Image: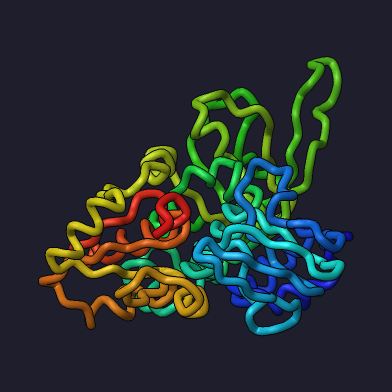
Length: 360
């Protein structure tokens, strides 16, 4: 059964903290699954992707590797977090018919990373260098929340899946704002890739010549918030369509050199769990870059909480004589946070693969 009301997602962490746009995206990708009594829903995952399993309704028995047992009831505070994130959980069993919801963990982590970065408005808007070049009507945070340009699908499998979140702010710093007029050709089919564009104002049309004896075929209409041009920049192929402005407008553009450079991962050292534990024994500090609700639910012993969306505000309060070992569930948010700390002159490394790869 598909989720038609995103308010259901408000029951679960960290999903509840997502922006409204991201929650709507996620609702369209999630389904409620009914599980019969005496079945273990943990063993029903037919997908190869790692999933977070949430109990929506019913009673679920939990058994842990240390022989502890517990009953989890849908709708309670304990059920706000994924069932399969409990430490030492061995298996489960439906004590009644239960409703569960499965969420792709990588997809959720991508949404959380972009939402936390876009939510750091103080760090973006108050940085004069960040807004000096592009006096945009929409801030970088506004753009990152645009689920048309930066949809979860594009961030997970499109060209932007290769863009390290830590480089997003740099992308907006390097963009130029240009004024365009109706009829202006922004890209010519068969031409070389030179810029990536975001439409801030205006409408453009995408056409392609399929048969030289026939007029160009209209493929799509691009509106405010749409983007174009990235594929040719990454692949070095010729432009496969022509983009023409249908109306006057304003675009943001990024040149090919900067676009390709920003696809490269920031140079942050990543270490194994064994290396991290050795550093902690020598005085390094564990830092959990997830939200406080996630940190409270499950964190490495002794870790402090450095939420990614607050990392710039925390920089001035940190001890620059310490080394910080940043982690999250997958390594995505911790890489972005470590990049910010490193730019501020602090010593930061990242737990490779996150806690999903190295369960304590």
